[in-house]
Image: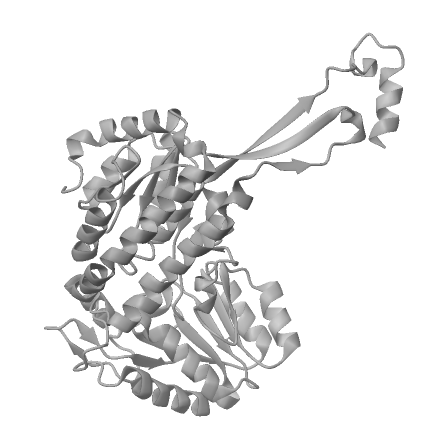
Amino acid sequence: MEAVSRMNLASLVQSQKQYHAGGETLDADFRIRMLRKLQEAIRRFVPALQDALAADLGKSETEAFMTELGVTMAELSFTLKNLHRWARPRKVRTPLTHFGTRSTIIPEPYGSVLIIAPWNYPVFLSLPPLIGAIAAGNCAVVKPSELAPATSGVLAELISATFPPEYVAVVQGEADTSQALLREPFDYIFFTGSTAIGRKVMEAAAVHLTPHTLELGGKSPCIVHGDARLELAARRIAWGKLLNAGQTCVAPDYILVQREVKRRFVDALKAEIVRQAGDALGGADYPRIVSEKHYSRLLGLLEGQHVLYGGRGDASRLRLEPTLVDEPDPESPLMSEEIFGPILPIISYGETEEAIRFVQERPKPLALYVFTENGAVQRDVLRRVSFGGGCVNDTVYHLSSPYLPFGGVGASGLGAYHGQASFETFSHHKSVLKQTTSFDLPFRYMNFKGSLALMKRLLK
């Protein structure tokens, strides 16, 4: 472990708790100063972060900025603009039975928080949660993924050059480091990763009754109705799937397309893949699969499938072509596991009800996308299908809006963040009632004659 010795995890957490108890982070102006320091540091480290993302995932400078650095800086600017308003105590109404009192909700930080980030977007899924934690007044420990070692190292250097470890620290290491951190008595845990590991995080949090957010995954469906603008739908679906070579938690995981337009849609989708991905195996800008293990898993998912397009790979470069699979068995591993790669199953349906039921019968997805010009179909899908978030006539784009809370539901996650939702996630909302001493209402006391009748009248 480079940033902090594993032997010192307990003392690190204790030092953060002591620093937080001193009260400095409670001041909103202090938080803003710290966020501006982070903003300046990110700007200085942009070249190093771009190089690290290229080394870890093969991301081009354009993709690194669009999906990691640019959206992180936008999130930071949005938070700086709104933090004073979010941090103010909020007055709420008082019922007649509480005459003479004033009621206030005060957002307060939890204390020392643990942020465990994944490898697929190692900047965007590390720093925006940290922005929310700092904005709410917490101290934080960030654990980046060991599967993105170059980016993890740059993040550790960035944070150590900006903040003292008793305020914000990065801890690097393998899976056992995450397990050791989860044994510490943090005041809040924020985890992004797989559903399987999310369950283990939840079990660890239960030991200390630690509140937590779980940003997980799942199989995000994309419904293409017969009246959709097919060429535009294909362009936006291909874009959402090709980002990071499909290694995106909200990437379209499978397509449900109405049977009568399937052939036209598939032709349009193939054309868009060619236009957007180019030479996926030999080109310089197409991202690679993160590891040999993940590459082999993806090839295994293709075994026995009817491939409509693509399917070739380059093991030496960990590249896999964008691949379309026709009508896979719904019970196959391809349709039961989150794909997390550039493979896109295509399944046809007849009526809208059939598509809705197909999604309803499976675990609640992190995202859902529906392409249709029919408002009634849009409303029916949005009303009847439970999912974390999504788009109508687009994919993935909802993820980058600071006005939309991002999170899952059921097996796809617990809690949400981005923008004000990040501030709320990392804040405890403390309810305070201030009672007057100018008078005292006698009917509240047990010895007041007629108090029961009066209280019943007031409560009506």
